[in-house]
Image 1 (cartoon, rainbow, N blue to C red):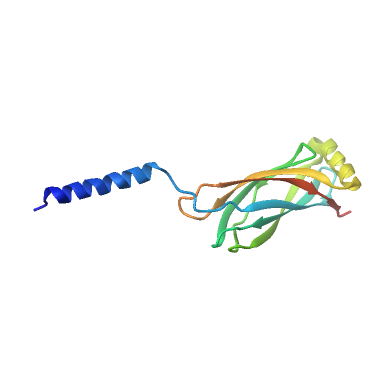
Image 2 (tube, rainbow, N blue to C red):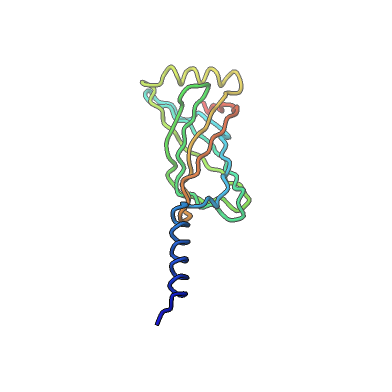
Length: 159
């Protein structure tokens, strides 16, 4: 038979578990830094211009960071340039860095003046950029990790 002390202990244990569940997930992952490292102009056709965006991610955690998806938004010289999601999962080593590139096709008909001003500004030197986004990681109960970075970068023309 279960005594009153046992019932009290179980009640306290259930209460503690419920309070812990209400507190929500605890962030156990330190935010990695994500930087835009290069913008390279590539193929150009009558209606499309391709750019390659290079990124570096630094993982400050003592464990590998399995990234399922990276969403990004890049502004160049205070103008919207590119946004999207990475297509493949990758892992950033513990206390390490990883690099990757994303190819972006821009519509020349819709963004001709923006692309022309970017190419002109890039030929004169460094461009100011702002990078924002989020990383979805494959770690249970971990919310997407937001990132933001500003800096300057040179445009590499592959003409």
